[in-house]
Length: 114
Image (cartoon, rainbow, N blue to C red):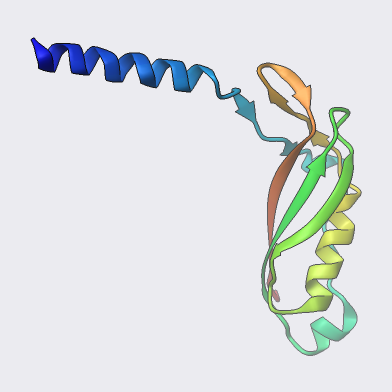
């Protein structure tokens, strides 16, 4: 009986805690709304490659209001070019509890020579 009461108490605590967190949906990049980054000349000549991870603060209207490099590709010029290009993109806004809200979106871009 004590075990049953303990389990019920644990489940109740979990449900109370879970309901206090807002349901959050991250913004999504609309890849058709912008051009892909262009390889910087110096980076191309030096055959620089890598993956850059970027963060964008997206407003409820889908526009980028802030941006930063989360993880560098190893090349400042590649990071800068990717950040500049994707900052011009539109996003499908994120939401909290079903309402559009300002949230961060993560975008990764792979720089590779072809």
